Amino acid sequence: MPDNRKLQEEIAKLKKERDAVILVHNYQLPEVQDIADFLGDSLGLSREAAKTKAKVIVFCGVHFMAETANILAPEKTVLLPDPASGCPMADMISAKELRALKAKHPGHIVVAYVNSSAEVKAETDYCCTSGNALQVVEKLKNEKIIFVPDKYLGSWIAGRLNKEMVLWHGYCPTHAKILPAHIEKAKKEHPGAVVMAHPECRNDVWPLADEVCSTEGFLRYVKTSRVKEFIVATEPGMLYRLAKENPGKKFYPASAEASCPNMKKNTLEKVLWSLQDMANIVRVPEEIRLKAKKAIERMVMLV
Ligand code: 13P
Ligand code: SF4
Image (cartoon, rainbow, N blue to C red; front, side):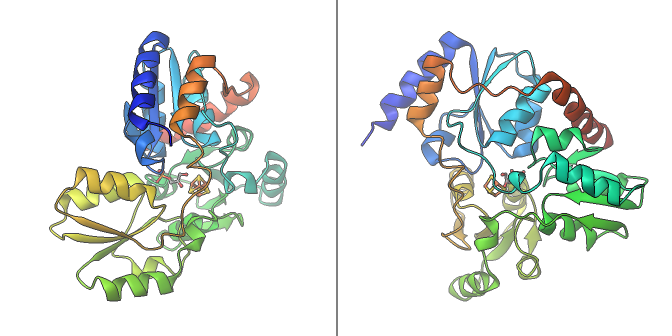
């Protein structure tokens, strides 16, 4: 059993020597969340990557997030402690498939969820995250939208806006494990609890939720709510931060099964090794990077 505290101390020492910052997504392992210089959702982490003064960014998240950091901060060295931590949903659409979809629907504006590869972003007009997807699509003048790759996030937006939306058939296999029966069971067990769900959840889960929002949205909602108990329909890594920042409030996972195996690949040992060897650098080819950056910048300018 590795000694987490010892590893955390070694990482803190090496981090200074390398002039590194550690960015951590809300779904990472608790002991990895504890070494974060910045802990957040995809949107917050991209913003942090863009403004950091550090030379090295250790990205404890999944591959598309590290790519986004490199797209926004090309002069920094971005390390992904476990290079195999991909996102199955991001891999559900390729640039070639998106080009074919665009050819089928000329005149449509393409919005890509940030959970997509740099190549897909390069074929995209606007990016969005779960924290701003609704605002991005709402603000677009164009009424005809191609939305990729998440069919659930896409249909959540389509249900709230009067726009013609062509959806891709991607989805998050982790969130898809949360079923309405899980929410109903949790509600019976905790009758006073409020249900919060991520928009990556299936469309038969949202109607059972009191609030549908991004991971950072959960934190804002809990902090301003008078309620003391919450059923959380998302990756259970989120519960560690919710509980830590809200002592006195209780959190129950809608389903303990919905753990994202890729998010859990970045262990403390791998963080240390990547810093020691300056290994697992994520770099997007310049031509793709410049095109992908435009889609991210358009998002930032819009919302
Ligand atoms: P957010 O952090 O943007 O809510 O996204 C959740 C997610 O699934 C990231 O992979
Ligand atoms: Fe991808 Fe889902 Fe894992 Fe997020 S939780 S990284 S969307 S598979």
